[in-house]
Image 1 (cartoon, rainbow, N blue to C red):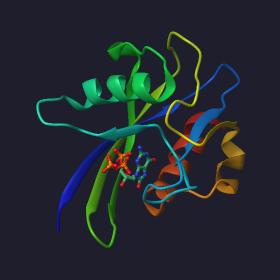
Image 2 (image 1 turned 45 degrees about the vertical axis):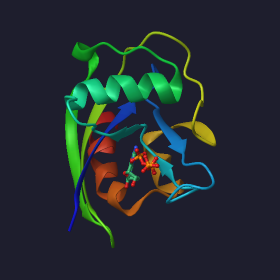
Image 3 (image 1 turned 90 degrees about the horizontal axis):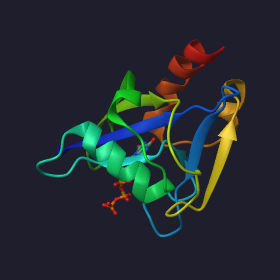
Image 4 (image 1 turned 30 degrees about the horizontal axis):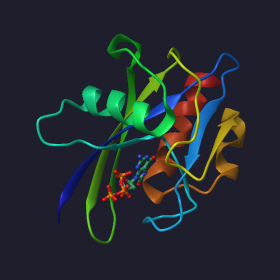
Amino acid sequence: MKLVLVVACALIDADGRVLLAQRPAGKAMAGLWEFPGGKVEAGERPEETLIRELHEELGIAVKEPCLAPLTFASHAYADFHLLMPLFVCRRWDGIVAAREHAALAWVRPNKLRDYPMPEADIPLIPHLTGLLL
Ligand SMILES: Nc1nc2c([nH]c(=O)n2[C@H]2C[C@H](O)[C@@H](COP(=O)(O)OP(=O)(O)OP(=O)(O)O)O2)c(=O)[nH]1
């Protein structure tokens, strides 16, 4: 089974809401709401990947000290095993905008379950509600 390392981030705004991003049509898991991020490429540290992805996907600039590790997902999909560290970030420069996703939503922690997510993400929710509620 192929092990895929993806790094993701829960952006948290001043009201304690979490940013979810909807995967676009045409991709695997289209329509599901995920945490921004992506696959770690050869030669990258995970933090570098995340800073790059947050810029590409959302148009924001994040500094590495503003990324705090929260938890991780380890999930067996049918065709690969996903290992996904989840960081939280409360400070960034720029205005969040959907450059690659179908939509964005700022979601209160007690509403996260209203947004269909990839299977791997479900166990992450209590970690966020524990942090924020
Ligand atoms: N970014 C992100 N990916 C997630 C989450 N949950 C989850 O299962 N994934 C999966 C979806 C993809 O298979 C993979 C993320 O890689 P990606 O965003 O670079 O993948 P992609 O579908 O664009 O694939 P590709 O075209 O680059 O091959 O991890 C999540 O919360 N955030």
